[in-house]
Amino acid sequence: MSQQREFIAAGEARPPFFAGVDLGGTSIKIGIVDDLGRPLSWVNVPTEVEQGPEEACRRMARGVENAIEVAGIARSSVVHVGLGSPGTMDIPAGMLLLPVNLKGWEHFPIRDRLGHHCGVPVAFANDAGAAAYGEYWVGSGQQMKSLVLLTLGTGIGCGIIVNDFSIDGENSHGAECGHILVDPSPEARWCNCGQRGHLEAYASATAVIRRTQEMLDVGLKTSIHKRIADGDALTPKLIAEEAEAGDPLSNEIIMDTARWLGIGLVTLIHTIDPSGVLLGGAMTFGGGASELGRRFLGRIKQEIDARAFALLAERIQVEFASLGADAGYIGAAGIARLEHIKARSQK
Image (cartoon, rainbow, N blue to C red; front, top):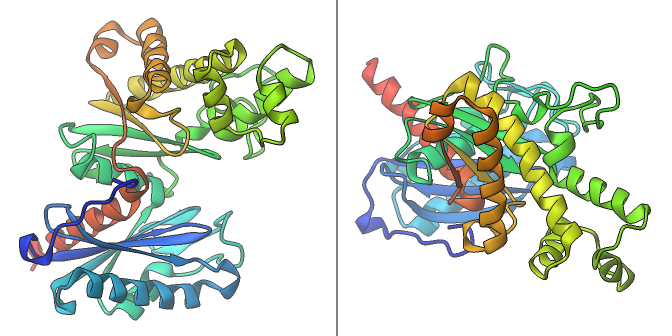
């Protein structure tokens, strides 16, 4: 959906409507979604972190108004807003605590301030949890009762949904599965969080680039050398292109990344016993549309089969996510919908 968005017309939509806001360090995605999870409109506004969180809340509210106008619906028909934000956070209190990518936004009551500017209630969620709910509601997980979504990018984000609930944890740090331990050895790789041996240190885009550079530095034979000499930047996309072109080292790096992901997922499968696992984010090596992506997924499944309880390995569904970059705002709108339904039932 993120590549070719399909929107429904206002006349086809089922009210009430919900606005979803996906807050990122560079940009903010905002969309209007109907009661069935179908998007009517989408807008994008710059985050402009340096302007501070209060000004960002004002611009988010203006973005919601713009999305409503584009959707062609009445302002009064949007009854709740959902906000997905990067952490750290206190979700029940609606507070940002120490968000790494939002410097100067520390200890800010973002949920209530956005609600003030929008004039309607706001539901607050971790951005990965919101994306997971989007996939659960109307994406690849809509036939699943529970799921784990891993978003593979600079780091590894995670959301866990069980029977309509996002697993946020006692301290709003639930589902930090990029930081599960996969290598306890004293020589384990350093994670960006400052600890050794975490899944993110082996299977994030940052880790893939770092591992590849180490192989280049010792002079291993690979077509990547020529690409770098020609001025190309070392990225997972470049590595994927060389793997697809038949470079053995590039293929080895990608399959080893899949192995580490499989090891990490076995722990999650044994802990949660979900219906399925979804993989999203920018680093899926072409996803299900490419032969490389399918081999990547197959290698993950192979590791799960080798290490998990046989019954769980047999029944677990491991697939690619389908909503792409739209999962965050759609899921945030879906969480807003849940809060709206709960509030109405309590009246």
